[in-house]
Image (cartoon, rainbow, N blue to C red; front, side):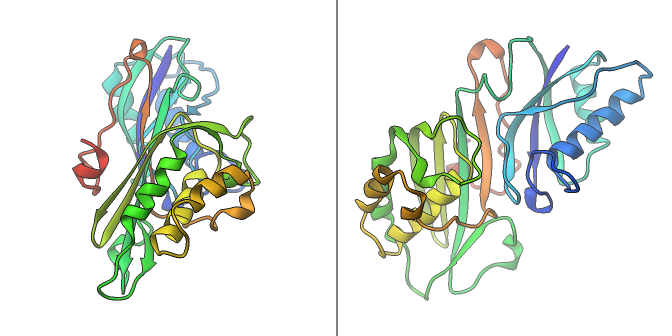
Length: 276
């Protein structure tokens, strides 16, 4: 049977989702927990290999990650949730489990993905948000030019070659992606970027955020975003911004797969930002 799981995790402790030699990874911990759970059944099983909707980078978090794997072990869906969670570290949790058809792929069946970047700004950072949010130092009584960033965002909506925001380590077959919406939500001392697209390149969201902040701090004009996009040159965009505030929030799938919605009300992010 093919099982899909919904995951939340704090990525601060991990070298990203994907298994890497001699590194602590989210995929490694999740697969280890699944093996520990099914191993108690004394049934000969296939090797556990998980496929994730998004291979998040080191330090990146998730509220709505979706994975799938195949298993010869049959259990009630809630048993998968409770059983796998009992073997996971506190930084990772399974929220739901559902049986899916063999045609389902957590990665390739996804129609869109939504990321949120949470940024705190002001004269001093909050230690309570260490590795949970990004930070920019601003002098007292100053704030970003939010309207300029929103104007810049309009240049990114649609299907484009996003090479200017692509890491040199990116393994995507094509830099062409479709951006559906970019919402910039200002709630001083917080600034949130909610970015929704069909797929994303390696470091793409963090490179976009860094470029938006150049415009928001009035170091560049809004039309600069269009120039950077058209250049298809990574050197044109701002440096990659820190991973701390980046959250994979939601993966959308065709209704035929009946994938549950992510649990977002148990996060610290405001409802106005997550869209709950």
